[in-house]
View (cartoon, helix red, strand yellow):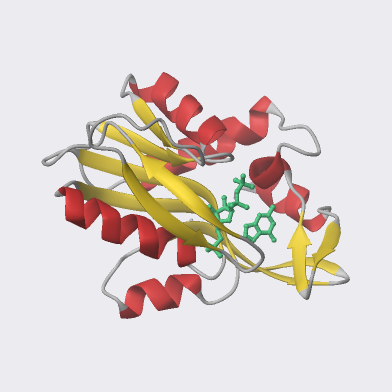
Length: 187
Ligand SMILES: O=P(O)(O)OC[C@H]1O[C@H](OP(=O)(O)OP(=O)(O)O)[C@H](O)[C@@H]1O
Ligand SMILES: Nc1nc2[nH]cnc2c(=O)[nH]1
């Protein structure tokens, strides 16, 4: 299952970001082009994995956005984007994001105490982004009903699990300079 996702991952080009082998894929980069059939496949799969009701979808800029858009269209539930730029609105929360190849700031707006949010993102690698986000949401008093990421690599999921945070992924991959291999598909 997840045939289109698997096939496209096996064809993903690899580039170097320092020592980090970075795969390039329609879901995580919008390059090569993101076919509607792939977006449909992964978002249907996400909706089959959610365990609880939610009233907001939370996407991390940039590549959480197409996922959240498709999920919102399928469910009628609104989404909010965690942005990489500030708006300086009242109540805006700033958090520091660190990945395997970058550091930056993220800004949360329009998430409030008592909100029930589904977090959706394209990739988890070190887990740095989600750890920072989960801490910020706990501070706000929002409930994360499910945390779903399409592509898993590295030790981020086990790092979060050790902290008591559950993250579900659709596929686990390994990335070397030769390309992507698929280690597990989570049906
Ligand atoms: O588990 P981590 O090591 O934190 O990596 C995961 C993060 O890396 C990517 O974001 P990136 O900042 O590259 O943004 P993009 O969506 O704009 O490519 C991805 O969308 C995740 O948010
Ligand atoms: N596209 C892409 N996004 C990532 N986010 C974390 N690691 C990666 C990666 O290797 N490729």
